[in-house]
Length: 308
Image (cartoon, rainbow, N blue to C red; front, side, top):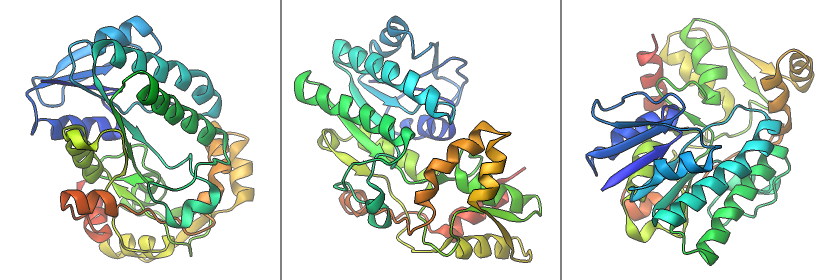
């Protein structure tokens, strides 16, 4: 039973490749520049914007996991995501392949952010959120009208060992590792959930290999602890035996920074997620699969201890 990761090599794709070894010895990694993870993976070079290349990459696969991460730029998302998801859906339908889509929370209504669950209303206030909603709608349409078997594995903001794209790694854990002050976007006195990447990868592999999980949305396992940003930063500094302290990235600072850095400019529209409580419920998965998410102290300690 071949299982294929489209967009292999990222923060989630690499860990997922390791987890899939528990279910199959036939793992195909697809990317523009794929690299071995397990030592015996099948590597396929493909551009997900090329329909025929995607079809060839999917052919012969029982399950496909879409974990690709595009550059954090709404213009690129608007241009490329519709093409990618169309190509992937067409290939999965053509080859009778199941689809597991690794998703985020950008599609949720602003007012759902303090208490997110699988039935939360979709009404994204951001450009990038509108793109993600359109992707999910395409998947739902294909399930309803084209016999696509798919599931959505949704994660909160994530962090983990070696994570290059996790916002908690970038703003907090990486600077603390270097003995520098942490940074925080928005209000540090608000609760903010973070999904631990090893938990997310393990859960995504479990879902993909559970027939009854399809045609559903699943929140990936995330700690039930309700910690504020300031408490998470204090915890990280305490683990490193460093003086607690952090810098708040105010809207003014972000606006100025955005004049010189496109990524900083792109985070401004997501401020609504950081200026109110942001809590991510994952009881559905944890109850169904008897899974206990990693506690923040344990996850943070692992990230800090594994940093080069």
